[in-house]
Every structure is written in C-alpha cells, then in structure tokens.
Amino acid sequence: MRAAPRRHLSYASLVLLLAADVLALAALLLNQWFAPGALLTWLLAAAVTAVAMPALLRLSDRVFAAARASRSVPFTGESFP
Image (cartoon, rainbow, N blue to C red; front, side, top):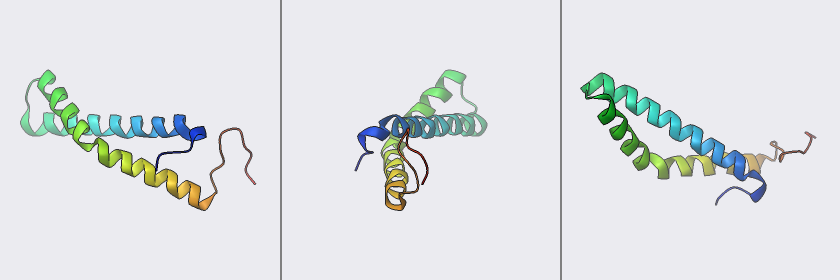
C-alpha cells in the first residue's frame, strides 16, 4: 500500500534517495570491476537501478508501514506527543 496522501513528498524523497544511492553504488562498482567507458558505466548503472526499482518501492512501503504501525512518526506540521 502506498503512503498516505499527506506523506507523498516524504515517500517520493525516500524513493529518490534510495534510487540515487543504488545508481551511484552500481556506477562505482561497475567502473571498478569492468572499467568500461564513463558513459557505458552510467548506462549500465541506470539499467541496474531500473531493475531494482520494484524492490526499492517495496522497501519504501515497508518503511512507511512501520511508521504507521508504531504511530511514533507524526505527519508534517504535527507535534510530537
């Protein structure tokens, strides 16, 4: 289940951060292991990131589900109890 409407920006930010991390890690590892050209490295890293996106979405869903279940993370603009 996707994030609550009030958390869409947080959800999108988390997914974007995870995707950027996978992209950078894949580019670094591909460059170190195979040493292709810079363009090919980034294209292969983008392909790895695209393949990993369903897993990243599930991971983000689980993070936000845990926040909903524990009710310890307030919505934006709310105060902590």
